[in-house]
Length: 117
Image 1: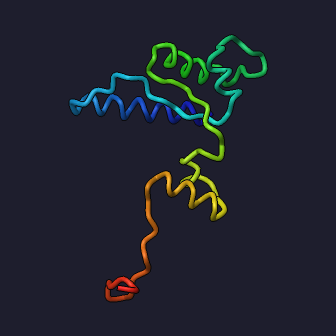
Image 2: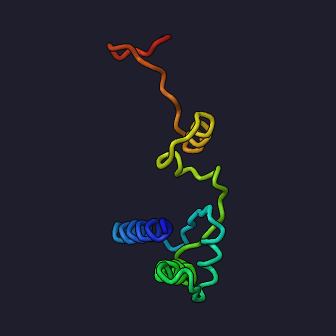
């Protein structure tokens, strides 16, 4: 479950920010596109078929209950992180790139001059 790995990384960043004098006191929002994962985390009762992953769900559930994290559903098509992790068609790539506020650079010639300048 990648959500557990993301939570661990966020905890590390939160701790590091605190050590640098910039404590993060509000809950960190984790965007999840899997509704069953959100449901399992929010209802942490034991499920026989998910015994092997219960520890990870309980880990996330404890942090949500402590208000360290907040889980929020985000549609798969709006997951900005996919730009770094999945092959995308050009339309989806450009849409996600614009959410990152990254602009396409104009090609330059070998001497460092932008074309069209």
